[in-house]
Length: 415
Image 1 (tube, rainbow, N blue to C red):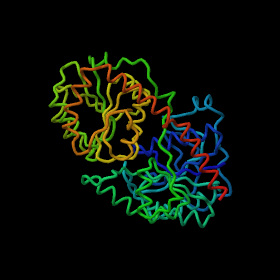
Image 2: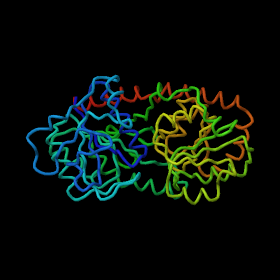
Image 3: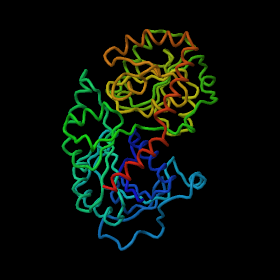
C-alpha cells in the first residue's frame, strides 16, 4: 500500500515527532510512503540540498512524466534504516515540499499556489490513501475537495490541544479551534483523535460518530525504556525533576517554577527545563541556577533526551491544554514517576494510579505539597515509575498504534 503522508518536518513539535515515528514504522512494515510538507524556501520542490537528504520530486510546474529514477519508496528493514537515517528521518522515501509564507509550532500559512502543488503531487504519486497530520493551515480545509476530485481516500489526525472543561483562556481558545474545524473534518473519510474525550467533543460539534476513530499516540517501548544514566552525577544532583516541552503560556511552566521556588528542596535537588519558547527568556531571569533550575533549551539529540529521562526521578507537565503528550508517554516508558494536569487526554493516561493528576487551576498549590513528598520518598517515585511503564506497555506502544492504523486503512479502502 502506498501512503501519501502530509505532515510537518519543522519546527520541532509533537506533530513533527508523530509524523516521523509513524512514517518510520509504516516503512518498517513494508508500506510505500511519500512525505509532503511545507517549506519556506523560494523553490522548495526543486531544491536538492537538504539536511535530511530525501529523494525529492518536482511538482511545482508541469506534471513530469515519471518520478526521478533516484527516488525509491521503501527501505529494506531496520538494518538498512540504521545506515540511512538522518536525524531520525529515513532518506529513501519521496519528499514533496509545499510552498508556504510562514510556519510555526502551532500553525502554517501556505502560499496561494500550494494547493496546486499538492494536487499535482497527488495526481503524479497516485497513492492508495492520503493521511494528513493536520498542521492547522487553510490547506486543511481544501484537502477534502482535492482528494475527492482525485478519488483518493483521506484520513486526518487532529492534534490541537484541548481541555474538556473551559477553565481558562487557553482552553477557551482551543475550544474555538475545534468549533472552527468540525464542519471541515466532517468531509474527511476518517478523523483520528487520541482519546475518547476528544472524540466526544468532535461528535458533539457535528462530526459524524462513525468517522471519528480513537488511536492514541504511541512510543517505541524498546527505545524509550529504563536504563543506566549519569545525568545526576554530571549536575551534582541526588534528586532530579524534569519538564520537557514548549516554554509558552498554554504549558503553564511558570506555575511549576513558582511551586519549585516556594518548596526550597535544597541544593541536592535539581529541576531541568528542556525546550524553548516565547516565555523562556523572561522566566530565566527570575528562576535560575541559584534555585537549582537548569535551563537546557531544545535538545535535538534524541538519545540525550532518553538519557535524561532515564536519570530523572519525576517528570512534571503542568499544561493548561494538551492533546496526548508524547513527552509524557516517553517519560512513562522510561519508568519515570509522572505528574501532569488533567488537561486533554493526559489525565486519562495517568488515571488509576499510573501517575499523579493535577487540577489545571491549582497547579502551584498542589505542587507545593507534592514536590517535598516526592523529594523525601524515593520509594514512592520508584513505584509510580513502574506503574507508568506498565501503563505504556498496556495501552500506548507504537506497535499497537500502527496495528490499529493498519486496520483503519484497510477498512477505509474496503469502503
